Length: 601
Image 1: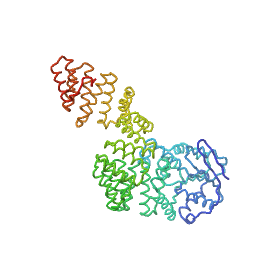
Image 2: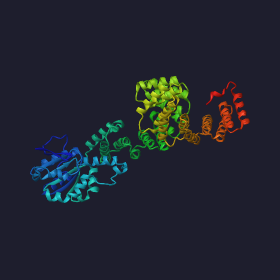
Image 3: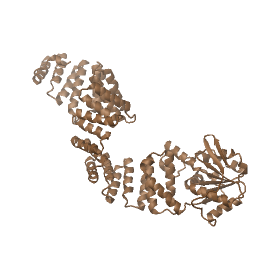
Image 4: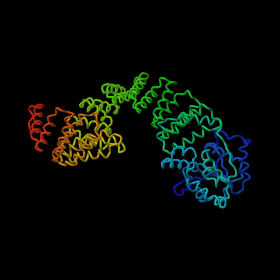
């Protein structure tokens, strides 16, 4: 007999047992735990509540064995294949519930897996999730607590819950009212052979990329399964070590890095001289931005296995995160000594060289990476950036074009291409590239998005499309991360220039003053242009004394700028200080003999 029930949002199957040939039997009938279970089932008449700790496979064998040994009772199985919230309702809707003496219930743990997933999604930290901290109760257990009396009054059935150890703990901690009515708790740990097979399977199948593809619920289920295998009585240290490594990978895949570190630390208690645990521990620490500790873990891994090129690269990344770029390059170099064709090492080597302004060397590193993998759009884009920094814009654009042939959705390549085109004065083409970047830009990467809007505004200004330029520059100001204020100088400066072109002089002055607040004091050439532009703006507003002070600031930086001298003369003339005005005009003429008055607005 087999019945399928569809109740609300869940499905349950109830079926009569059939004898099955299993690969192995449960322990013999003389086994004390098994015999105690059979005696309890035999003597229980009417309502009863038993809990059995076992694995799903052992549970199936146990059910079959009990059927053989208690033929005089009607025994059925309720297999729950997904999470449920109201177990009472499921049982109450069974057509032949009055004829059941013993009802085995399997799969209730699915309701706990689902609950664990929900906690993850609502912000519980993983320590709360996996350490039984009991912040709340799964809905099915709330229901069991509430329906306890009705179970006893309405069902003349001995219920047998077959559960793994973590699920038993759920009942003990979260459904004590229901659990306290139990007639017995029986434990059937995994036998040695099955323990070895199951542990080996998990160890062999354990792969970080595979773990990344799991849903949160699947990952939780796998974590709990591994934790139970680690804790089994007959587990040997070597398998415990390997299971802990897999557990750490699983936790890292779910970004539970603190728990992953705890797992690796536990693994190192078993095998302190194994490089893989130290290396994985370093990865987790780096993901927590604990870079100093990560480096110490990588160093430990490299003491044990000096030729671990991945550890050298990861160590270099941690050093780069700390701004220790020369040391980072040394680490990448060590990796390349071990594996000269390690593509990622060449890319990181180039990236850090680029940060140090060693652009020619960076290009050489990217070229090496591209020899190994010519289809690496990251290397082509990064190579283009280094070429751009050298002012080799045509070559940079060629590199970006190669990147975009491989990955037309590379928003950073589109952005950098647009900047290079703007530098070459090819403004219409630059605008097309920047607009393409805007279509693709990840909405959560505000820093990159800022640069697109910034250069789009500059490009539109140079095309004379001032209103549109102002909109783009204002977008950049909205998006700029607050920890990178120095670059904001350029946006405020170009905003001031744009507002000047729109004859909005008061607003332009505010923008230029904002640029002066942000300008790095060591970048005097740019600072000169802001002061000169500020003087021109104040001239337009008729604030001639302030304009002269601005020109004087500009000339203190660049005393041979004839345009500043000329505009200073205009301001002096407007104040009636004619002798000083003539002296300023003469200075402009001395610096630029062919200078004419109508060359400047």
